[in-house]
Length: 136
Image 1 (cartoon, rainbow, N blue to C red):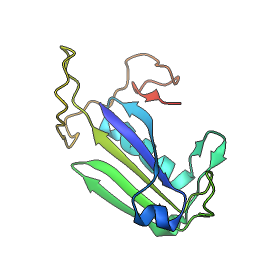
Image 2 (image 1 turned 45 degrees about the vertical axis):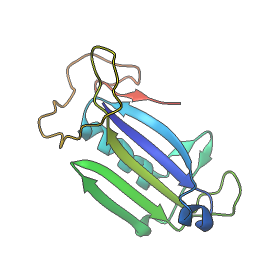
Image 3 (image 1 turned 60 degrees about the horizontal axis):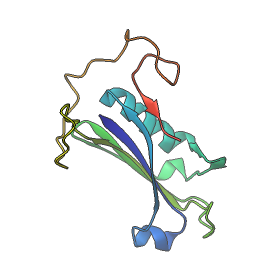
Image 4 (image 1 turned 135 degrees about the horizontal axis):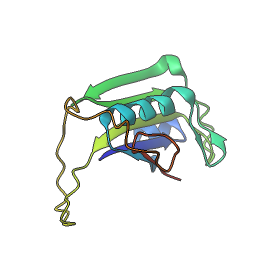
């Protein structure tokens, strides 16, 4: 499974100390859809709990690690409030699911090159055909 995580840093000091507000945004069956969701969060501002958390899109650093997106954007309105956003990090992580239900806590990374596109499997909870689950 591909997990899209979103970490918001209310102030520059929080960013320097790596002290952010972390949440899991969504879970996807393909790296293609997870990367698309992470980029959408990074560039569209992504509304969370009714608040827009935007940063300067000209100050985004993107990286692909084993075919998975990671992005950090800085330069937002980090006023120190709970709803402030000086910086934001969105990334895709891969978690191998053990079909026997036993999780040993290990991670395996994949480039996603052999992943199916997820189409043609009927609609899912978010109304499309990609097998994704939107969180919160």
